[in-house]
Length: 114
Image 1: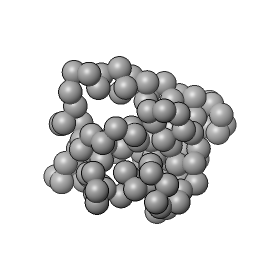
Image 2 (image 1 turned 90 degrees about the vertical axis):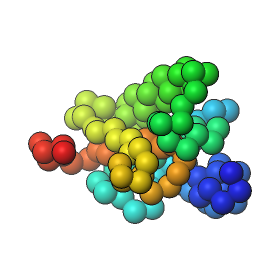
Image 3 (image 1 turned 120 degrees about the vertical axis):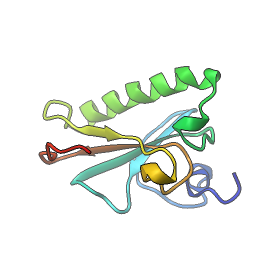
């Protein structure tokens, strides 16, 4: 997608502080963190949101969760815990229309989720 912020980051047109990268997935620190540790994990394939997943994307989504687990271990917050958030669409709070997973860690998260 030509005007997609995350597609531009994937192409290297916009710099990011990478945490993980392979052929299908990129993870990097959020520039506007909501927690002491705030990492975004995105598929390199442009998928607008969870509502736009195709059957063929199911393996990729599973792989993303595996990468999240790996990142939590490598970054040292697996033991203490973390939160993974996926916003879907405008009413779900999604601001960048490219599927992305927020990893929040480094502090006790509030009990109230909704």
